[in-house]
Image 1 (tube, rainbow, N blue to C red):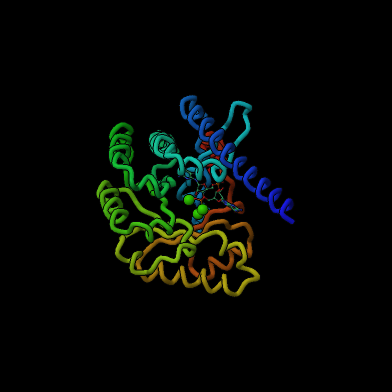
Image 2 (image 1 turned 60 degrees about the vertical axis):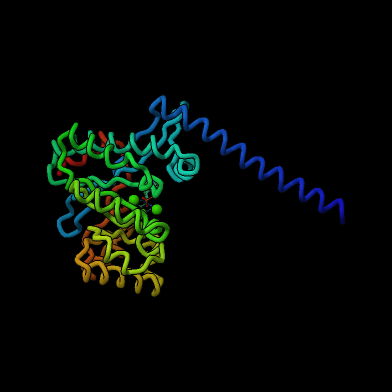
Length: 275
Ligand code: C2E
Ligand code: CA
Ligand code: CA
Ligand code: CA
């Protein structure tokens, strides 16, 4: 039995070592990717289901590595957050987003661009400067920029987050609470923060047709958002049944594969020119 235990211990320490090695390798690769500018922002349309028109776009980062393979943010953003590289990556995203919005506005000057912000970026003292620089350089209208912040950050450090959000809103930037319903934050936070938008997490939208609890959650989020005067966006809409349910319950703004996947900027502009 002793031998078996030893071999187990060896097995676990090896796999832990593997994970650490993998992380270090990824961190090294990320450093190089930042220098070589191997990132791209894809855009996914956000639709007003009443008209079918595109009202916003969400910028979603992709990493195109040396072999031209696209790596999803779920694979590298968590590691970038751990090792601090999310700060330079985030600055790149902000700069790109400014240029991109300028381009999008040459097709439709009413469009809003949504940009994801990591919780770590809310601790970055240069965040505000990065936005001010981009706004000044591109001349974009700050009220057409919306920052998506996951609900979880409200719990960890409310005072600081509140201060940053207040400064960003002073620039005219809109704030959206992403993955709403998953973070267990209290409604008081939401009320005190003066945000503009909440996005219903796609896990709730996904099971709308056969899960009564998810129906109840979606209805509750819509009701909360309306009563606080917030805009509400449904994420991950994939079926006509989901669209039907949302529209029946007065949630008209939505995003999901039913309307369009995230695509490279050129393809997105193609969509806009067909509108
Ligand atoms: P998120 O902000 O919740 O983004 C929505 C995710 O849902 C995206 O995955 C999008 O492609 C996917 N999605 C949209 N519609 C549907 C649908 O109908 N069905 C399904 N199954 N999925 C749908 P993606 O692009 O892989 O991004 C994953 C996460 O990575 C994002 O989740 C966000 O948290 C993070 N992320 C993406 N870009 C950035 C960025 O520029 N900065 C930071 N800090 N995080 C980012
Ligand atoms: Ca998002
Ligand atoms: Ca989300
Ligand atoms: Ca998410």
